[in-house]
Length: 386
Image 1 (cartoon, rainbow, N blue to C red):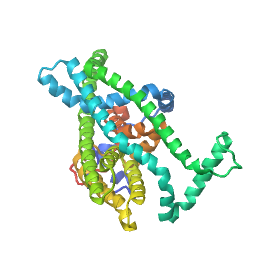
Image 2 (image 1 turned 90 degrees about the vertical axis):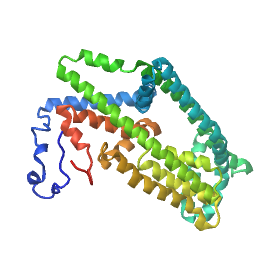
Image 3 (image 1 turned 45 degrees about the horizontal axis):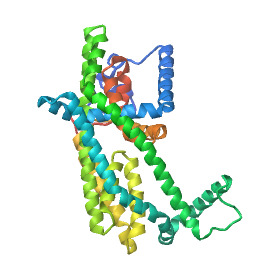
Image 4 (image 1 turned 180 degrees about the vertical axis):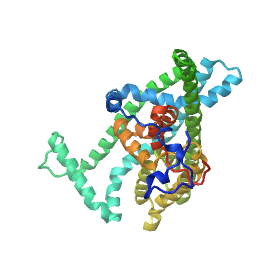
């Protein structure tokens, strides 16, 4: 599909003169039958409703599929060395288990220590940042009111000496519930991932076999190859860049004297998988950590400042330069997708939002009736040849 040249005039006045001839109705036809639009809208709504209702089943499957795209280059490399597919798939699963288990074991201690320190550090935060003392008092009042409604506390009783243990217990209970949910979805995801890796191209071959025309078979292969190539390149690139961000953040926190720099390196690494929203959460997190741990006051702002500088260098310069020729998604649609899938599936949905949007664009670009929608998903291609 041809695209609008970089030197095309902006669409300010005469739209017909601003658009390139490659974007006319002959290239990207829009559906003219209202019945088609109506049925297509109903199908999308039904699919999204099913994805929301069956989250516990669909989310691990989608996550396993994305992980398969990430591991596919390694699997093909092992195939070249004549490693049996079952053994290669098992090796990938064991390595992932080892990496995640090792990181979880190494970081669980520092994370638990910080979870215990957080309730005790709230008075310090109130003292150092007077601006947030009002919202914090309101939050405490809301928590006390909620506990009273559920019978967990007597509204007429003043907080006792053990009241400080309440927030700590709440935080620990939340963490425990989150760990249990994560463990369940984690095991399901890896079970599905093992069978996906072991099956190889079986699904693709079956889909090609059922296509009625040779043109359709070629189209299915083209879409599959493009999805695997672009999305795996995207995932590998951002994983490497996120690792570099984590290392740089850990070194910066260590230089500032912040406790547990490895924990903050892991936090920066994970948050960077969520574009826009992740770094914003990171800025707030590192501001709070600095306020709790560092003196004097100017130094307490340095974790947030250094994290922000690292993110700007990576997120606004290096990563866009590496991915510009493969991914030019509309940033407005990216943030909408992040918010939507975070509401649908939580944090895993926010992580999967951009890969799913990229896959949608690749498919739409190669299916003629959906080409207009694929063009709508495309962003600006600054500094690139068409």
